[in-house]
Length: 68
Image 1 (cartoon, one colour):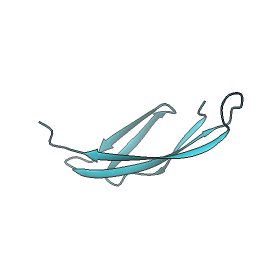
Image 2 (cartoon, one colour; image 1 turned 90 degrees about the horizontal axis):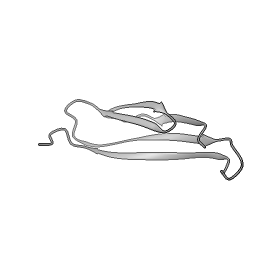
Image 3 (tube, rainbow, N blue to C red; image 1 turned 135 degrees about the vertical axis):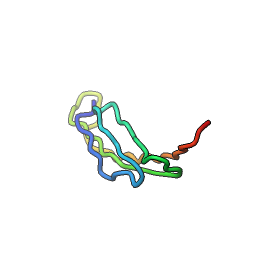
């Protein structure tokens, strides 16, 4: 089970809201079209059937502001 989630690289063309360890919201800048990315670090400190440690996840997004 995830215990911690941190934004380690902010997107260049928007913002990220961390709601919980299970929910992130990305909001692109107004009228931006193109690619964006951000990185998070997740950590678990529980044993049992889970692996203890941290991982980095890179999200790559393509934004289209004019969808009809």
